[in-house]
Length: 358
Image (cartoon, rainbow, N blue to C red; front, side, top):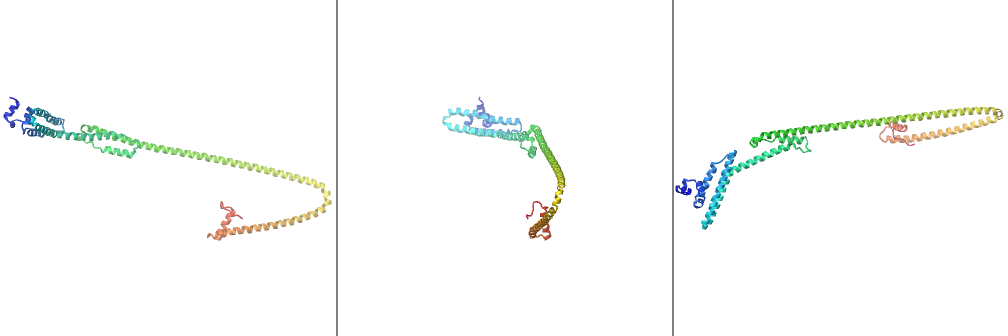
C-alpha cells in the first residue's frame, strides 16, 4: 500500500497535511481543504519556531524554515503541471489553484522570514551606525590646514561626544574606544603644536621687530654721527676762514700802517725840502687854509643840518608807521601799552617771520 493510500485510509484528520502534501503534492488539487489546512499548519510552524534573531543558531533556523516553505512549492507546482494534462478541462481551476498556492506560500515564506528580515535590517542599521562612528573617529586626525585652536577644540568635543554603545559595537567596543582615545590624543597634540607654532611665530615677530628697532637706532645714530661730523667740519672750516680773514685783515692793516708811516716820512722829507719855499708861501697858504677851513665848516654845518633834517623826517616817518600799526592793533581789543609793546617787538625783530615796511 502506498503512503498516500495509507493516509487516505486513516483519514485526513489522522495525518498532517504537511505529510500528505509531501507524500502526494497533487492532493492540493483534489482536496479543497488541503491548501487552507497546509497554510494553517505552516503558519503554526512559523509561530512555534519564533527563533532568537540575536543568536546565529536562531537566525539559521529562521532562514532554514523559510527555505523549506519555499521548497515545498516546487513539487506542488510540478504536480499541478502534470494534472494539467489530465485535467485539460479544469485548466483554469488548476491555474487559479496554482496561483493561490504560489501566493499563499510566498506570503507564508515572507511571514516566516519577517523576524529575520527585521533583524537583518536592524543589524544593517547598527553596522551603518558603527561604520559612521568608526569612520568619523578615523577621519578626526585629518585636520584641514586652515583649522585653528577653536576648530580643533570643536573637533575634539565632537569626537569625545561620540557614544560607543556596547550593544551596537559588541566585541569592537574596546578597540573603538581605544581608537577614540587615540584620535582625541592626536587632536590634543595637534592643538599643542598649533599653540606652540603660534607662540613661536609671535616670538619670531617680536625678535624681528626688536632687530628692526636696533637697526633703526643704529641708522639714526650713524646719521647723527655723520651730521655731527659734518657740523664739526663746517665749524672748523668757518673758524679757519675767520682766522684767515683776520690774518689777511691784520696784514692789510699792517701794510696800510707801513704805507702811512712811509708816506709820512716821505712827506716829512718833502716838507723839509719845501720848508724854505713854504716859508715864502706861508701867508698865502695860511689864508688858503683858513678859507678852506671855513668852507669845510660851512659844508659840515650844511651836511649836519641836512642829516638832522633827514633823521628827523625818518623818525617822524617811522613814528607815523609805528603809530598806525599800534592803532590797528588796538582795534583788536589790545590796550595801548600792549599794542605798543608788540610794534616795538616787531621792529626789534624778536617776532619771527614778521616785519614792518617803512
